[in-house]
Amino acid sequence: MVKGNDVRDLVISHFESGKKAPEIAKLLVGKVHRSTVDRWIQRYKQSGSIGVQKKSGRPRTACTKRLINLVNKRLNSKIPRKSLRTMAKDFNTSLWTVRRVLNEDLHKKCYRKIKVKKLNEDQKSKRKRCCQWIRKNMGCDKTKKIMFTDEKIFTRNGYFNPKNDEVWANNRNDANEYGGIHEREKYPVSIMVALGATWNDITVPFFFQRSERLNGKTYLDELLPFYKMEGDRLFGHQNWGFQQDGANCHTDKSVQKWCKKISSFLFRKASGPQIRPS
Figure 1: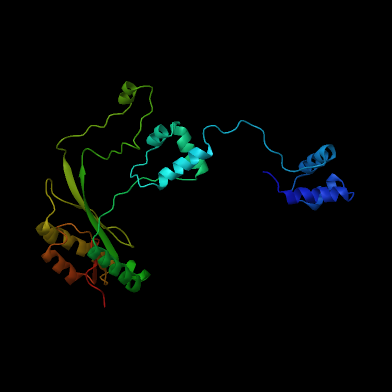
Figure 2: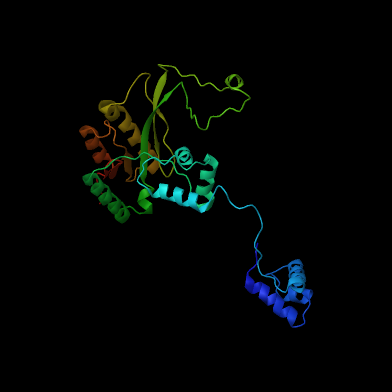
């Protein structure tokens, strides 16, 4: 690391006052090394100065100030898609040069776009009121009395992530032999499983019958009594809250009426708290 000029001037002032290199190194322990003090003194004797010298080397021909300004202007422009390949083609340079300008010169990081639900003004105001109510009424003790529930369909095809499930091989044929193919059935065998999670523990899984699908009647007659039984078991028959998402079977009027009757407070992801506990 390059030392500042103040440290260099301090070393020379001690040297001119008659101190030797070992003494100067002891006085500046933790700031400069003994070998560095010796090198500075030798340079001072030869040239009369120990200022920071200009580094010699090949000048930058690719990552120039002009290219940096062009890339920065492109980032701040209103063009929706700012592809690195497009910038490299427009600025007559390589893809790796543009990437180096973004990372090293402009100190930028690449972030992928994420999908979020589009909200209108009424939905935004509802969510804001929901968040304000949660911050005001939901303390740490009440968050430990919520059962979070969801349902999921599992198929025999399994889970496949094309970005993370990689196979390293010499060619495509070898990759296929080493498990590089993930076969998917058109109509796979599937089963729906429901589960609830609480601060104390998780519920036992609820397995639907084969080819059985979730609707308002099935949710009300089979699943809600199961959640009620598991909630009383995990919370010890105390007042506890119930959370669900905005699926059609969850927003059914008969389902909502049943939930409000058995739960001290009810949450739905789409619109927040349905009943406020007293």
